[in-house]
Image 1 (cartoon, one colour):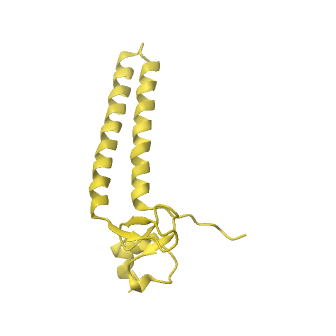
Image 2: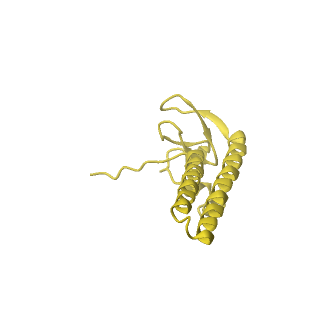
Image 3: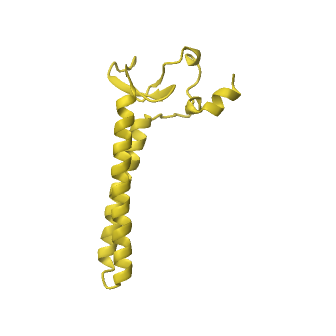
Length: 123
């Protein structure tokens, strides 16, 4: 049986991370409500939860500015508009591997192509 590899768009990965931060912050603050008898622990959990939610807001702002600079392309597979970050990325809709680099066309998809060190080693 062939191994199925599912790729994910970089923008979607970062947005998912920010969403996880929001829910984790809320759960930690909820845990603070469970231990309200221990004042210092409750306060610590509330502060940690708020910091995680603030961090998620920072990540959302950062990915928003990155998304504005991303290259808009039309996916050849699903024909929907998507955005690309770096030399290789995946379609946000159908997860089709995409590249704008003519030298990488026909090669196996590898996210390491976006790293400068990997590109210099494989020249």
